[in-house]
Amino acid sequence: MADARLWDLFCRVVDNFGDVGVCWRLGADLAARGQRVRLWVDDPAPLAWMAPAGCRGVEVVHWAEPAAALAPGDVVIEAFGCHPPPEFVDRMARREPPPLWLNLEYLSAEPFVERNHGLPSPQPNGSTKWFFYPGFSAGTGGLLREPGLLAARAAFDRDAWLAPRGLARRAGERVVTLFCYDNPALPALLQALAGAPTLLLLTPGHAQRQVHALPLPAGVRTLDLPWLSQVDFDRLLWCGDFNLVRGEDSLVRAIWAGSPFLWQLYPQHDGAHGPKLEAFVDALGALAPAPLTLALRALARRWNGLEGGPLALPPLPLWASAVRAWRDRLAARADLTTQLLEFRAG
Image (tube, rainbow, N blue to C red):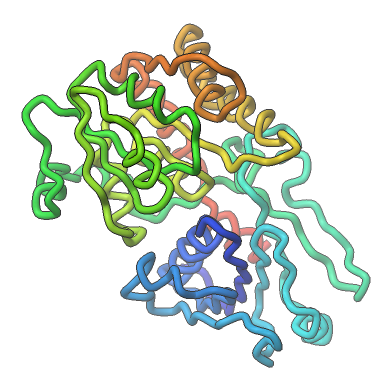
């Protein structure tokens, strides 16, 4: 176990809870490895359902204005360029020794990630901030993965988890989970799912609202989910024969689930999500047969509104095999928390 240090982790909740989801997982994983964490968050309300039991070793600080006058810890992480309060940054510069200051960036498979990971950024007050990029290749900071996660996944019994929650499958049904932003391709998805008996589990918000407004084709049955804790959300994805996820946090959890999945990126007005999607498909497709990669690229582009046309689902067994091969390659690399601890110790 690494020497205990105090980590200040700054997070702003934008609009879709992904930022605080990543930060809570990171803070809880650091605490589980013997570190002390102060999670500064401007809107702690989502944690009431995301992490209702809290976590020993993680203190939640409501990031209000003015910010609490606390002395900086040993490591300061600003998640996704959220900029800690100026008065806190001033205290960082006066601390002896100064804290390690990291900017935890967004997840991407694009080539610039390896080039920029670990680079210093001198600041006007004389401090140095370091860029830390999660990623899918050996030259990046890796992905969040708690110790024992994949062993728990391997031992999981989905029917024993679904039935007590009123989500039991009927004979012959496959399980599909839907977690999405607004998406004009949803009617095409429902038609694609109609080819086999499907239990479609709908997360709160965008998924439920949109699907409830559409006619359901024969063979597709829906059930509404409540807001789930992160622990239960992981297990939801373990239940899926096919998972549709959005943003960064649920993407990583879908990878560890090891089932076929389709990712909806946060749409950006400048189209930056397009190259990001292409790079991601390239990374996933590196271990997949070429025809499957072509099919996945077309499916991903249509689901993300980058081209028109029907949604055609590749054979799930072939798709699952490719996902598991990629998952196993990623799991052989050091996870994000391990690399953060090593970066601090180095």
